[in-house]
Image 1 (spheres, rainbow, N blue to C red):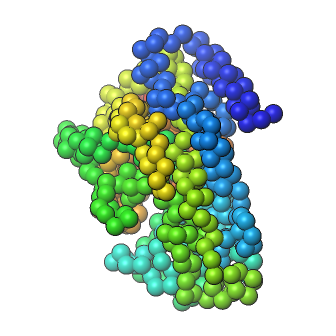
Image 2 (cartoon, rainbow, N blue to C red):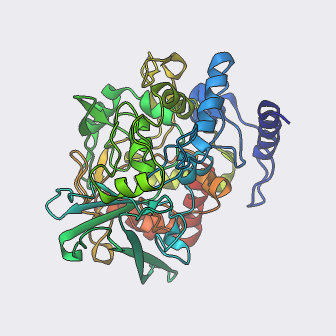
Image 3 (cartoon, rainbow, N blue to C red):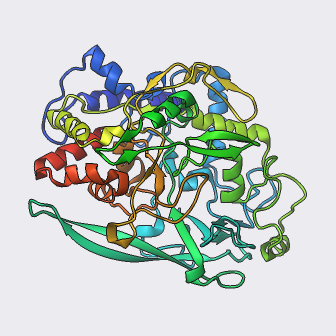
Length: 480
């Protein structure tokens, strides 16, 4: 069965399921046109109606003809594992964090991280699906390591180090007597390839992969609207005051919208190939371990360093693939429990940061090699994010969500509001419900209860709800 036919059947099945009984036993009612326009079409013309493992990994309907052929090629480049061979598909290493884009972003989602596996970190062998940022406590990078610790390496080459996790648990109680448990993961690094760095001299921040839902729409966001949200985002009664992150990319200062801390203005395809996989390219022509002993070890294993590992044209096809991905529609929107949950979401002030309605600029986007995608322009979208930085607190379990890692203007305790569209399908797509930047939250409830700082007031609203209301709000999140 070809890809298009398979997806057509999946779409038809998913649309039927969307109108069937949900797991709460309440029958779905037919959508009115107004409801469909406002809630179902998460990304305008880039919305899909899948509720399967393909929900994050399907092209928008406007992707046809030559664009569709490039999408398929970009999809292949994204998913196919790279090797240390110098032939097509090679270029991996000498050290790396992932062996393909899809190895960390399975089905364009979040690969299950080793944080909750028996290895509890990099392990002696295997793959962690975790990105490890390291800096000195004054924010300066360590010579010989750079900004990312590469815990994987090709055969015959020593990784830069291995990350290990120690989990600290604490039980809390809701006012109604129900209990919940939070886990704080403490990271340590061993097996440094060079001189060991003392823990007291090190800040270590671990990130698990972001979902690649709505990447094209995020790149097409109207920056004037985001900056207007920042000017408006001052709600003293809620303790909320969001701000923009500005970073310098490609030689100019830009508004950051991508990444955990809004530290990127583009999809960083070239950076991903270089830093995550050790694949040299026109923007980053040097090996990520340039000057380190792994270069010589790689040479001994047959690696050649006299040519770039991937072309700009290939990278643009990956950029195209990402920006042409569709966003799953909301589900069960007429379910009374979900409706109640949405009302409670707003009453708790969650919508003040997880903004419902945004717009893309008229002209759409331009890919890294100049291809234009006007189809992404002029759309009303529902990402449930303001893409602003917010202080998420440092008080919970003595650490909160403060990772002490500075990105652009973002301080350690500041994070970009996570877009929630499609989040209810993460378990279907990736087989887990680990949330937040390092996956410490094992479910929606824990993710909410980790909110501190500017999220404290909303968290407390949720905390003081009845058990049924808390479950209703979570059911709403599962509908996104």
